[in-house]
Length: 118
Image (cartoon, rainbow, N blue to C red; front, side, top):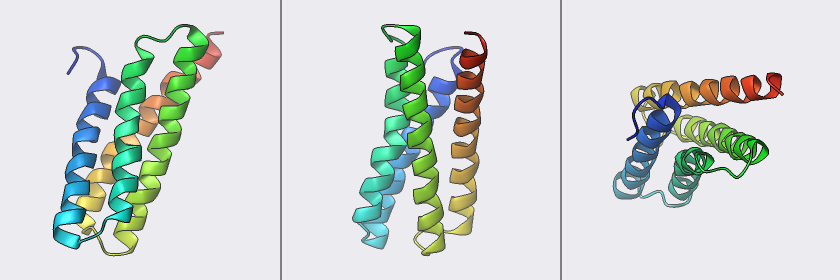
């Protein structure tokens, strides 16, 4: 993990959680479709944040973070669905929801700041 980049750190840590959640869903719940969705969107957030470090322009940087925000929103959808269909416990849901909401909040804050500083 990088030093002094809370968005990178949180999105990377969440990617690890997404991989472990997918493994849990496949191994314990024998659920393969939703597990692929959550791993795809959950890991994409961190990958896009990482890509943004080497953006070619301010617009490219903003675009990568906006896509990361979309992926975070999608991931939150899958987490809600997994909970509401009893694939994950309330405790697991609450923990995942806290993490994804923090990432969404960070992304919203950063993108708003960039838009306001044009």
